[in-house]
Amino acid sequence: MSTTEQHILRKDIEASFAASLEQRVARSSGIQLHQVIPNHWFSAAGSECVSMYVGGYFYGCISIAQAYVEALSKYLIEHHKLKNSKDVCIKWQRLLDGNYVTKEAHAAAMEIFGDRNDYHHLNKNISQEYQQLEKRAKQCIEKLYAIDSSIFAHTFDAGKIVPANPDYWPCDEDNKAPVFLRQRW
Image 1 (cartoon, rainbow, N blue to C red):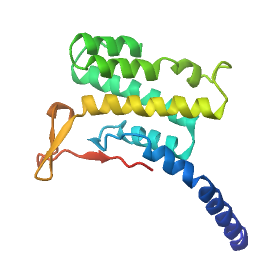
Image 2 (image 1 turned 90 degrees about the horizontal axis):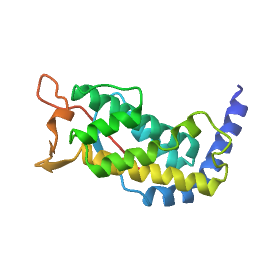
Image 3 (image 1 turned 45 degrees about the horizontal axis):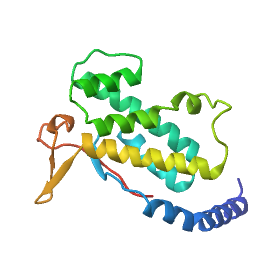
Image 4 (image 1 turned 30 degrees about the horizontal axis):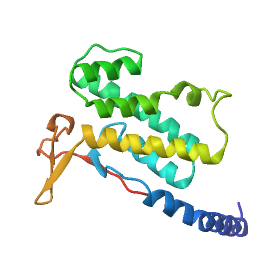
């Protein structure tokens, strides 16, 4: 690509971003975000989900939220050495039955995962209407907040994270837990 073509492309991208900025700000300011979670293999995907919602990529947001729920259930099942299942709903039920997740976290996971196959397979019945997709994506973000703020609950004491469930925050040899920071954009 020539320098001129790159310059034109840059201007087009800047104009596109500027045109969507107000909607991005509105979406970003309308959500709650659990800003610190332990750095597991699925942590970045949860953050990317938020970025996709803010950016207006609703199919991706919904799909990644569903994948996150699946990965989190896998992590928790393995962590607690519970009987595994290919069925994510069964995993979450086992986690609930064992009191490893709250009823609210379980319900939020089930709400996110409820139409997983429709989005995963892009079935004909999923909405193609922008407003409906935005609403569904926002629901996913809200439910992710409910899940993460329950499972990865923490407080701060003199600048240090104090996890409610330290088991979920694996530490390195210096007793420091690597974390993943989330942002609204």
